[in-house]
Image (cartoon, rainbow, N blue to C red; front, side):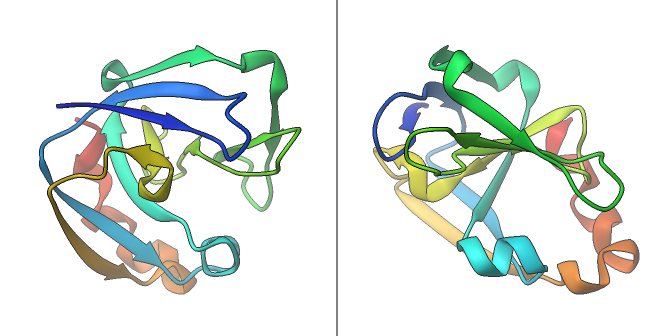
Amino acid sequence: MIYQGSCHCGTIKFEVEAPESVEVENCNCSICNMTGFLHLIVPLRDFRLISGEENLTTYTFNTGVAKHKFCKTCGIKPFYVPRSNPDGMDINLRCLTPQPASVTIVNFDGQNWEQHAHTIAHKSL
């Protein structure tokens, strides 16, 4: 299924292909916990930025591998390149319309990322 996504102000628009039933991660690391990001990790080939690239800004921290993409206007992070899957794209489920028919939320211990990253590494294949 093709989902449409955007930031809050609508400047950033994208499409993502994903099943009608999805499993997403609820991570407890510092940035995810503060932003409420629900992780739908997909292969890069299933993501397409439609508009707003010039309005994206990137934030990196710690190892610098993850590339957190924010809208310069509204501040929403609709997607980013995750450290766990640098060959994929991590979509904020909350930024999609329509929402998938079925969503399973799995807790992910991002506070202890090194011990658990292998459990989601397959998601961008």
